[in-house]
Image 1 (cartoon, rainbow, N blue to C red):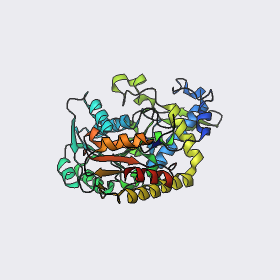
Image 2: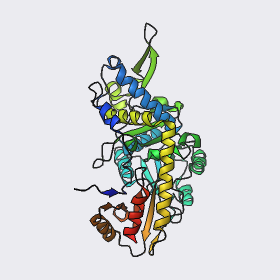
Image 3: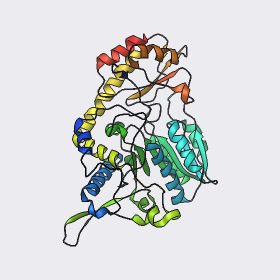
Image 4: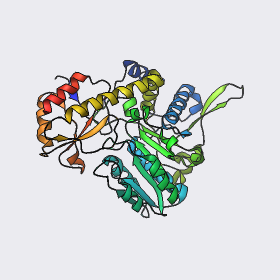
Length: 383
């Protein structure tokens, strides 16, 4: 069949992945999901993990990163559990503008802790960001952590500085959740905004979307929380001959040693996808990363401008966006339009009514491989 023109996003993005990434993954030294159990024998694998951790620290602007989690949703849930261990409080406040699957995963993880309480804060219907007044009401002295999307599920870049002030007042940890890592090419790093734990999904920088997976969870935090971080940590040292060597360090946090007292029960990480992300970001470089982000933003603004001129179509939220945004159809018929688009070879985005959102809302994502001709084709098809 013919290739479809896709505007699907919602946490899984079809950015360009060069053939070199897949080719290098196929090397026999790397082609396994396992972190080695006799790790010092596998210096190449360990160095790749170390480089991955370094990249994640740079992306998030934080001190420590682990060797990866299963995906962005599990990373967010692990962050909430980590905050509970740190401050011994049980109230987790999360924005309803987080991806619904992230909220569901957090809820699932917390189900094993009867004393844990998850409080969801609605969005501001004007901006599409978390409602600041409702958030202030939800955050109390019992609050362990506040989880905010950056950008959120609707593509809105949230104001983390304002949330940081709320967290300080409650002595709570601030956790940011970033499912589109290319956004970090243009927005300020979470660490620079006072975030304690930054988590995210690295799929967009590693592999193309494949029926929802696989992904790779990104997890970084301030150095003071080092001993509470879940997952594996690769460190750099010197051997008895004074040569640089890589080791798995602080392993006493992990389940193969501490069992039920471990910081997490995560074991085999997504090492192969983490390697793919490491290769991709190395090929991109800082300049390529920023240029890709700038192209995504420019194309997104072009599409927003074009769609907003169509009768019966509005942009319901005023908040700033990166490469993803919501449009609203006055007649509410999203499903009908998606069927018509599909007939024309276009995957037209995500129907937000299926996820508890407004029945007339459609979520669209733009990537650097789109052309203006692609965007004009979508605009014409919806006109």
